Length: 265
Image (cartoon, rainbow, N blue to C red; front, side, top):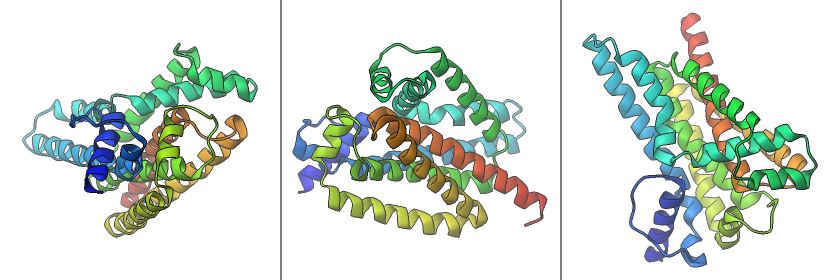
């Protein structure tokens, strides 16, 4: 059992991050608990985000002028650096498919198309500029919740893999879903979700509560959009959800933080 868990850990990190880990054979048994470790990648991203923020604050306290904007850009790019952009790739493919206004079968074909369409390029630019604008208003109070949000987005994404219908009969997500030990996986991810709810509200109060509302709304939209337009979820759609969930959570936290400070709360 310990060996299976260790292999599932290695597969999760090798598939969904660029964090170096030892290799593991891709068998159904080794994949079975991979989703349980998927949120741990969010923990690494959140920890790195917090460390970069604290370094930024330390440099600013010593009046290093380049620290503010350069570190804002670094914080925006950090998840892409640590994941290799695998989720952004799904976001871009999904934007191309949704913007095509084609029948379901054609949309699924567009998801597999290796070419990048105009809508994907436009969406990427808008996304990155919007993220930079949101992060330009970060504070120490908001960054704590945003650091946890990387774990939350992956917890919800993992639950969708184990619970939502699949749009295709083959593919990487189907392999993960079929090989997964669904009941233990749902229990583990459900435990993560409960712990995160408590932590976010305890650490951030209203900021944490609004972040959870944004995550829940994103998850509901993800399910309804996937079922309506694709007949289920795919790996690309899971990446789309993760990117949308993270930017909406960040926006919700920053806006709430600005409002609370303006109201003297």
